[in-house]
Amino acid sequence: MIIEIEGLTKNYALGETVVKALDDVTMGIAEGEMVAIMGPSGSGKSTLMHILGCLDTPDSGLYRLAGENVAGLSRDRLAEIRNLRIGFVFQTFNLLPRLSALENVELPLLYARRQDAKERAAAALQTVGLEDRMRHEPNQLSGGQRQRVAIARAIVNDPAMILADEPTGNLDSKTGEEIMELFGSLHREGRTIVVVTHEANVAERCERAVHIRDGRITDA
Image 1 (cartoon, rainbow, N blue to C red):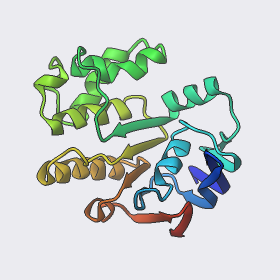
Image 2: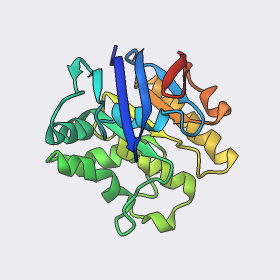
Image 3: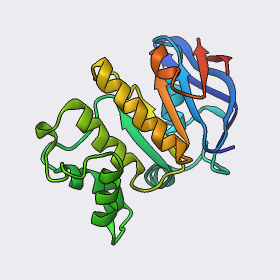
Image 4: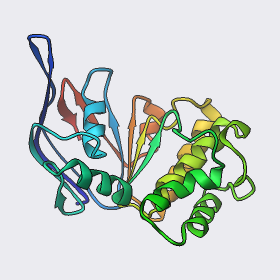
């Protein structure tokens, strides 16, 4: 298992009320799987995504990523794990507007102080079919092309897991299909991909879906 979660809980205080965002969540994802996490607004899927991505920590429980229990690590160590082990793809692309596609993809490598950053970034852009758009800035690219740049940035460090948060949410249906085809291709290469979505047609592209409601896994 690349992801092992046992008894995960996360609470938030809203005034005098305590909201259980995650309530005794236990689940696992095998290396090389492509899994969708689904749930309505307020279900806890965003909280689960943040914990899976080491962007937040649980109040209690175990989260083991690639064999390491990351549930109680320091912020610095979590930042290191995010950069080296997790590739993020967001609904809003999160590209820096004044940087070229190549420079955006290079960023994780520069943080990791890789000497071959430019070569690896160029190879990642070629993987997603954008070798002819490397020098373009985000405002010179279509929405689908920007999401491809974001995917190239996510895979450039060869992470243990790609975590995609509503990756087709800002795209038209045809472009969204193309992006899911790209994820499918990356998955067939052996990559572990977790897609957080509320769209049934996106979840259908995954091997299985984990459903969450009221902070609990209802179907895995």
